[in-house]
Length: 214
Image 1 (tube, helix red, strand yellow):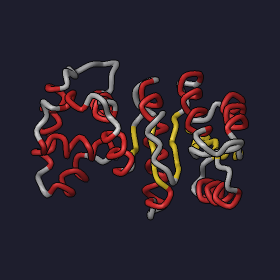
Image 2: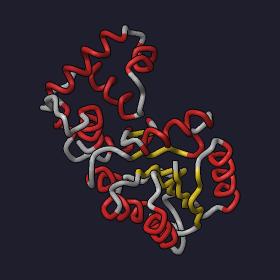
Image 3: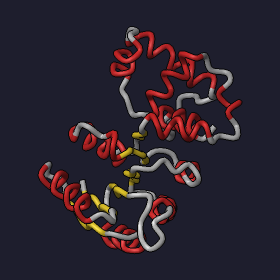
């Protein structure tokens, strides 16, 4: 993968660069502010950009706003927000631009480098990768929670784990049910959310976006 990293903390930026380069990925650029991020993405057209939320000059939400602009202007680039903060104000906008190719992980909750790299690959391939705390924060900030009222409690559990990017087998392990039961729940979710089979739309991603944007 070709990757652009945007992180204002020099030590973290260097660490991410080393970890990903050691695993054979190309680091096209590693920058420290939002404007440099947008310029690097425009120049290198990476598969994915890893973006911190709070960056210079104001250290508020510059990174997240830049990520939204990149989603709009460079649809071929996946966005993985990697921060210590859950910022729900613009998170819905990040999801609304297009389906898939987006994730939001929290720095202090990533304990396994392999899982982190897998999450980057999922986002680059058009999937999703969300930390459970981010999912919870987005739902708590939701103004239209009734959208998912048609789902049972177990179906919402399954959908929450789908938002984290977990496979059917991983969901089955977490909920201590059979994989066949998970498949049935997912089929019910698609049906209740009005997501019929389609050659052009990824129903799993669309269901997750309905969940996070509800």
